[in-house]
Length: 129
Image (cartoon, rainbow, N blue to C red; front, side):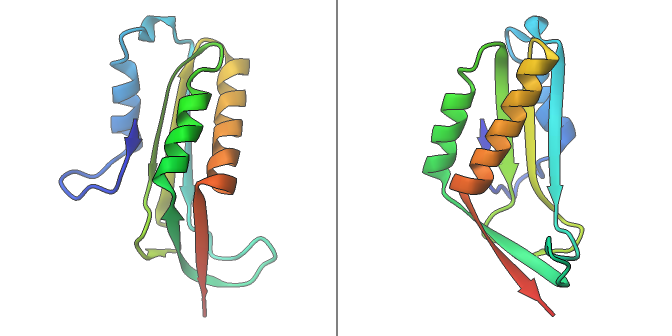
């Protein structure tokens, strides 16, 4: 499931984990791993940031998720990205939740999915002082 920006109810990690636990095969899971990306106050090289905006390619995002969900041992992958809106330092940017059978499978799936999303499905614009 990809959570697109919704105004009727806020998406939370708690809700996403609950949704994963509702998976019909959840009894096969041995781990749920979550990522919560937030807006940092500086760039990687230390330049002060006042905020950012994320542009999301939803078609590419769906392709990445479809592929990653077929990995051995993975039951579900969900993502919510706060795209196309100004975000301030400390704001949540992305939630990513992966459920699967064993630690090695889940950690690898989260890492690979996150890296692919950041490299191929999102574009970040940072705002500076």
